[in-house]
Length: 280
Ligand SMILES: Cc1cc2nc3c(=O)[nH]c(=O)nc-3n(C[C@H](O)[C@H](O)[C@H](O)COP(=O)(O)OP(=O)(O)OC[C@H]3O[C@@H](n4cnc5c(N)ncnc54)[C@H](O)[C@@H]3O)c2cc1C
Image (cartoon, rainbow, N blue to C red; front, side):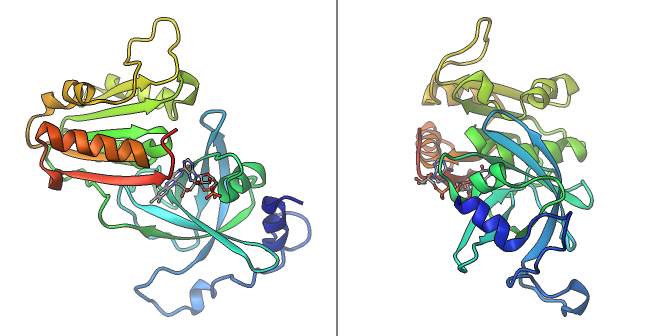
């Protein structure tokens, strides 16, 4: 039996059929818990699953105890196997803070990944999952910040940056904003339709894309890995006051941050978040 299936059986994720066995790690009922500053684990219900690409899905989760989040923050997801083994991973919030009652997490399937393969292979609408959040006070952006906004994403690193763009739109932000997003192929572009619509809003948000493993006929974006020249072309027009957020695979984040500093962007205006160990 797969690890994902063992976990699913252990925590009784199905909402239908016989009542699920209460997991040993279930948090105390919200009513009986005294207010505390620390984040408690809670059990969310999956209300919707939307495929974004062949390898990425968005999970909409209803939380019994949802705290307001800031764009860029994440939740921790925890799975527990029957023998007590636990796997815990972080997932950025994709939805804007203005959306009430639920959050979206977008998860890319990592081959043989413990948690992502569980979420892709086992979770269905109506299932329950343990998480806590929102977490993180550094990699966050608020639409009240007036400076131009630069965003650089690789792969699923676009998730927290999408939350920033959604927040900006919901809060009627008017500061110039540019997203530079690197994907392997056009089929790997997460939120493709929404990103294609963004510039049409005419509120100063622009999207630049690069494909690193081949582009379709008529592709007008970049076709190489992000480099210093590309960063200069995209972000120089935002001026010297720009604030830049970089998120994605570790190697991409590090090379982009180094290139930005070499271009003269002050290090304190660059915030980075690393999602994973590989750059492939
Ligand atoms: C703050 C933060 C926010 C994150 N937000 C998101 C998000 O919004 N969406 C999302 O899909 N992921 C996100 N991640 C990555 C996520 O936490 C997991 O690392 C990822 O889902 C892999 O977990 P897994 O259990 O499936 O794989 P594991 O069992 O941990 O790993 C399986 C194999 O894949 C490799 N691997 C692990 N993570 C990655 C990765 N990211 N890229 C490539 N190879 C990897 C491992 O080295 C290992 O060889 C975030 C990470 C952090 C730190």
